[in-house]
Image (tube, rainbow, N blue to C red; front, top):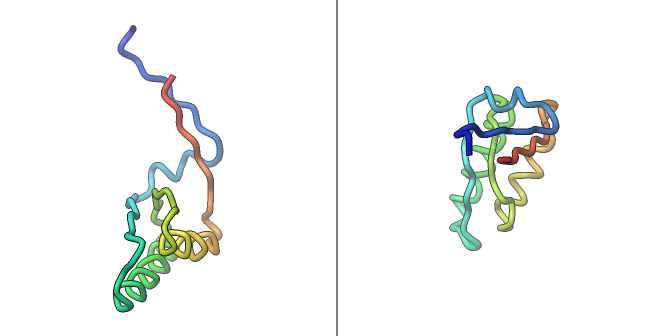
Length: 81
């Protein structure tokens, strides 16, 4: 092994230069937290924040729908070789 890592990407790799946040949500959340999270997702969309998540829980899925309404949407896949 040479100690080097190769990274390949598909899509716009410039999203990696933007601010990033990971989104992890429980299956069940209090109503106020749900509304606050939706507002936060809209703020992330407006500010062009890169959001990393599995988007598996219902709340994550709804946040994904909010985020995908952005003109800045891009899909990037990285892989260690």
